[in-house]
Length: 176
Image (cartoon, rainbow, N blue to C red):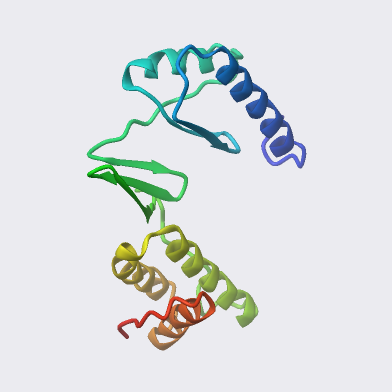
């Protein structure tokens, strides 16, 4: 299916669901966890079964090829999340790809202010809801840098961050 076609995500989801169902049924080694989001698969498997799993998935259809990312130093990026394993405790942080530009809608653009503020609020919500509390201070610093580069006034940035905590009953105090 062509990218951008309304039917493409539905067809991709059906194909991936069938592929993973067949994979689980035919697999000699059961995975501790196997899940997907659209065409991204996340699995917790034994290291020695990794190559076999990748080959099995890649042999499903000659036009579908999977790649694999392996946990490094206890960290594995998945979608916008960085999964961190330390002392067998899992935490989650927001993950920003190295190629991410940090560009959002500029505060001074000619869009409606409501749309501009909603874009910033959604960005803040996504970053803070993805990450565990222990990463919020670091992520708030990054949020402020990104929104600042998009010409959001500092006071407005602080207000939007406070609003996130109020709406989500987090009771957090932020540094202005």
